[in-house]
Amino acid sequence: MKKKNEDITVILTLYKTPKEKLSNLNQYKNFKNILFAQESDDSFKKELKKNLDFKFDYYSSRKNIGLSKSSNFLLKKVKTKYCLFTQADITIKEKSINSLKMILSKNNDAIFIGPNFKNIKSKNKSIKYSFVKNLNAACMLCDVKKLKKIGFFDEDFFLYWEDIFLMNKINKSNYKMIFANNTRAFHGGGKSTESNLKIQFIRNCNFKYGELVYDYKLIKLRPLKIIRQFFQNIIFLAINFILFKKKFFYKNLSIISGIIKFLKFYFLKKFFLY
Image (cartoon, rainbow, N blue to C red; front, side, top):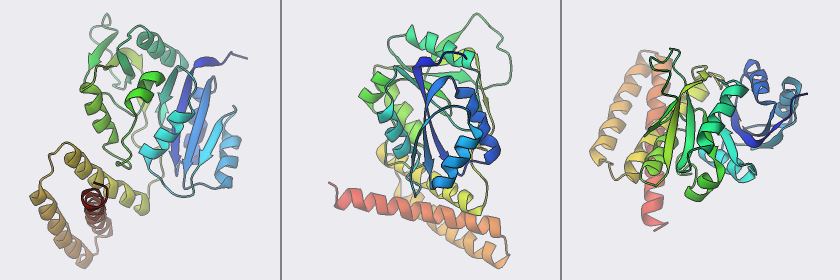
């Protein structure tokens, strides 16, 4: 049996993950794994044990607390020097993870390193890695000590934009991010969760919510933008209802819900927390 990697912990949040994706997690069997399941019950843990041939630490929530909160929770449980933040539909070889660790360990001012997701060969193989301003946050190896010092995801975000805001914060700090040019990974294209109207509603709602929170935190928020998008989607909502366009009707409704969710957040911050 291959010896476990003692330096890296894999942290992963699961939400409505399709059963066929669960066995994909076996690629991490030689690492310590900490999993967090959203809107989960005991049956899901049994399903995990059925599909995974390694031991793992397991936490769950009866409701969806969001990616930011669950990721921060997982980070607090990490005791190793590095952690791999990843998703259920990511495919990456153990050799590649170790390659990321080797590069990160040689750069004392680096906090994150990410693999190359592009399915094309590099023109210049001599460039093994480069410092960048942005990474694909779907899979990143993190220096735990530095990450705990600067803070992981802002919990005002729920599902989207938290990674963009985090990288904005990193770029304003003394830490750097690394893109590993010759280290490959594959992303299954957003299929780490089931797809139905409810989940699409949650995604669209929180994408709009996250966008507005991001603008608010960077002092880029324009009231006119909120008003225009709110009433624009109300009009399209009525039109799509009349035309029986269910998919577009729910999309308009989700965007309106995202705007309302942001307004609740804004007024709470403005009048009650400050």
